[in-house]
Amino acid sequence: MKTTLIDIHPHIISKDTKKYPIAPLGGEQSNWSATRPADVEKYISEMDAAGVDKAAIVHSSTTYGVDNAYVADSVALHPKRFTGVFSINMLSEDAPEKIQYWVDQGLGGLRIFTTGSTMPGQKPWLSDPLLIPGWEKASDLNLSIAVQLTQAGVPQLETLLKKYPNTKVIIDHMLKPDITSGPPYPNADFLFDLAQYRNVFLKLTSRNVVDSQKAPASAETFFGKAVETFGAHRIAWGSNFPASEGTLDSLVKDFKKSISFLNKDDQHWIMAGTAQNLYPSLAD
Image 1 (cartoon, rainbow, N blue to C red):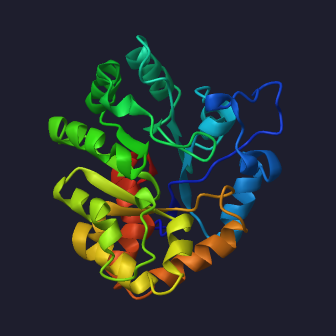
Image 2 (image 1 turned 30 degrees about the vertical axis):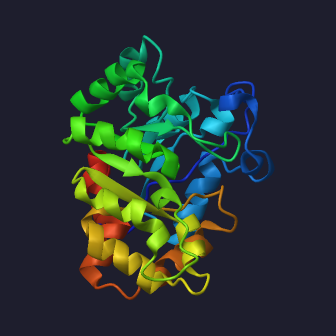
């Protein structure tokens, strides 16, 4: 059966805090992971109810820091349905070895978390020379690198995009641009300008869906411009469940409605095709 929907941005949180201790990056656990966690069994149940075929589970840095054990163990239990996206300390001397270790554990993507709800601002890690050995290791392994950053981090990222043009880079939450002005979205130019780098891919998440529903913005004009600028083959969907409130089914329905104006081919790329390019183990 052909895969029709892949989620490249869910998180899972174990109930077993002894086996998987809480040790958030920055020292503060994210509110969502403390108040509405979902373990892998819960996520699978939500997937089945929502019609999600496969997923690239993203390690929660704001819960477990750089210990990816729970994601790795979960992927090992369901290797035909999941891959995992891990995080490490990219500035450590052993970063290349850590990357190889988690790849050997069955994980298929790397994420660099440079900002977040519990770690506001933009960390300068993308411009630190210490990051390069790990970035090159990931490139050599043909890993897609997801990056969570703010607009302030874009110049740092551009340096890497130019130096490593064959490394696929996924922009988390489409950089969460300000689209409150409505079309043609001048405050999001910094996002659309990244289309010049052919190795940049956008992660369209539930956060973007919510933002697109606030007039004068609209899903048709904002996502339409993104598809026109990047191409649907460079955009993939991620639920952000359970960080985004609501059932996975409700998040899926909102997402599908937001791209319903697109032709079927473009919808397929965003719903599954691009994800399978970024994470080959999720291919049919």
